[in-house]
Length: 242
Image: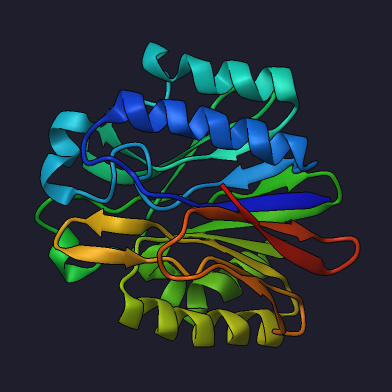
């Protein structure tokens, strides 16, 4: 199976422009043979906590229908980033669109301290069955705790799908950690980070894939948009420009 991580630059708060960019990336990922494509954290709005409340959309929103239509047509699953409104508050969400299936959403369960004024944590794990694989999503800060990946592995996951918005320091720390996750738990890791302005920092790219032995298979640079395509059958990955 092929999976794709998109390294993209979001336009601050412009859901429509970002959605159109997502659709183009989904088309390209499908053309490369991917069965799943993952985007960076809060990719449809950009990582902009101060805008989250006004930009939040439920996963059922008609505005997201083009994503579902593209996934239905292309036979691909897309995991995007979006603030999600809930009775408990706004969550850092990962809406998931699968062909011919109801929409799902995962929400970040462990928040960084500076996210607490804007977001409330999710409270449920989620795994995707894709072919022979069980895929566990993780969103940024929570993915830096080995316990999150361990719990996913214990629940049957054999692939760790990480969506982040990280600085240069954060991505360097992430690379060391995700290699350890892959090596210690024996499951490949696919990472999607943003590039360009995000909140008060610059997204530092470095989207990458590791095999089940913790070997780095492919990595994008710190500023270019692109894709990492991971082939789980051959345990190989390539970097593709956007």
